[in-house]
Image 1 (cartoon, rainbow, N blue to C red):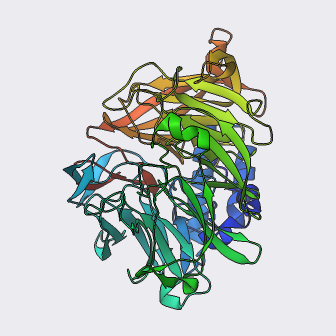
Image 2 (cartoon, rainbow, N blue to C red):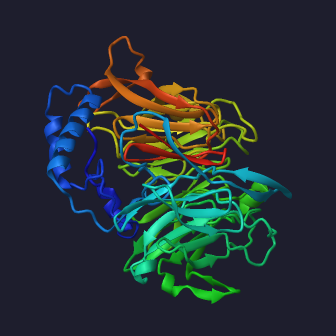
Length: 553
């Protein structure tokens, strides 16, 4: 059975949905039937034929399909379905639909572009980390937006896979777009796309202006403003982060993180943008330095902030390149909470329904191993750590180990009975799936200064080295991509027996103990760094071979 209730905490998060759009988690298989799904789910929960969660899910799906044949729902003109990296303000929504296979349905050529790294110009193809497509329904049609290595941001009609418009940046685009509604704008510019890029193939680190973060009109493709990512102690002026929009009091705001390790509070009203230094720039409400003075010598310029901010209640949470995780009060625009993880933090924080933070850490500049943390931000450092999951001592390419991806959590997809799960992909070549809540044993932390509880790891799978974030979706499905291709799994929950290893068993809400079995449904080879998204059962995923692929049945 799927969790069809809208997330109450999403509404609490400073009305983030008011600008990002209130995602109707009851929308399924193309129908907006709202409260019908809650009642259907309640009836299915009492159907004792459905012993295992997968069967409950199938029961609800059958009844939903019946309702859809009987009800003609009214669909709003605009729906921000998957409007930002990892879907919503808590970075834990990955789309809708139940993928059946990885049959290639379509390949869209994204092309290639030149970018300068370390003084050397190289050709980059397709799209990479984070590179997740966003999905919006507007004026009766579905659209996908994607930024790519050919320096282009595209709006694509999802039915025809034809380009509606294409906007060119000065360098490759790595991050995922964010889309919000500007209620102060004219009709054609009410939907705004926020997108970052590298600093510019023809610009030096010391250039006066590096406008690597921009706002584009979703409906027209017209540029609305550019933000100068100014120089700091960081050696980067790129913008990989996916910004987030929210309300602060009566005004709409944006929070963006530049790789210069500055957090920017910006006005969400494009009408307040003004000419400055030769370009039209947004109104800056406040800038926050996302590193400490002690980090400058320790990191020697690698203070790069690449994660995307998440919202919970009245706070923003994000990981910084200086090895720290920050909590910012939205009303005062001040840092009010800190945790020093150490290492290099690239992954974005996911926030569970009970307000816990899931963060990842690469193995750089630390004596211990990289891995994943679960944190309680109501407690100070280090008492905030609920568990730490270390990965293997194994690197790949330039990565020394740990996790560059983010943690996925199944809060929007699991049944009411099954244990809450997390999943993440590691540079060490493994997909890890574990319990959000239960622990077993202890492990030394990344800084080797204390031991922490370890989460129960319920399943692992050798998918190959990966920096892509795996995603949960409907029907107990999970999609994981990496340098070893794309894998489609079904999560099968089986009632545990006394013979099962207690460290690999987790408890459902009724007290039933479950073991988790991963069933590989399909696999296709390839080299993937970006994160997939699912809509109507189809998987959209960018590759380093130059293509945007549609997989499904």
